[in-house]
Image (cartoon, rainbow, N blue to C red; front, side, top):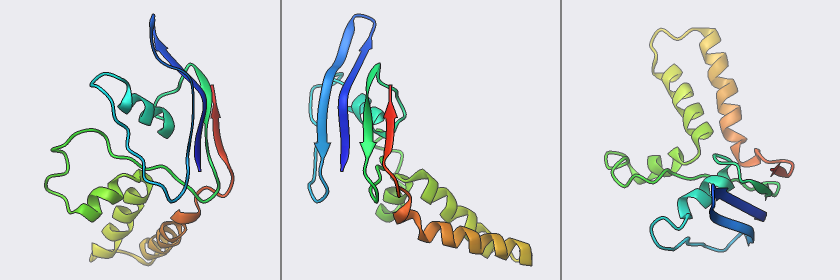
Amino acid sequence: MISARNITLAYGKRVLFDEVNINFIKGNCYGVIGANGAGKSTFLKILSGEIEPNKGHVEITPGERLSFLKQNQFEFDNETVLNTVLMGHKKMWDIMHKKDAIYADPDATEDDYMKAGELEAEFGEMGDMNQKVTQRTF
């Protein structure tokens, strides 16, 4: 479960969120809707840790993670759907490219292949990245 507790964010006198509390429960599908400028993208940035709220915290329970793609409808036109989804998890995407680059290098050394093996293990464990509760308090 991903939980937001007492999230408050204001820019000057403009209050976007005041004491917001929400739980995103595994197995459910959620949509964030609202008028332009209402703070939808800002709220997702708070959940991901990209923006810090003035007050409150976000918790991600063990075994769960949050991945997202930035709002740019044309940025992924030349990518497959699978690659676009994987790009939403930047660390996974970066590891995948590093290991693939080693395998594609005809001059790769034994040390390079050892590094690729380490990257493969890390890539394979990505589902277990959050073994403890991640909490950010502001």
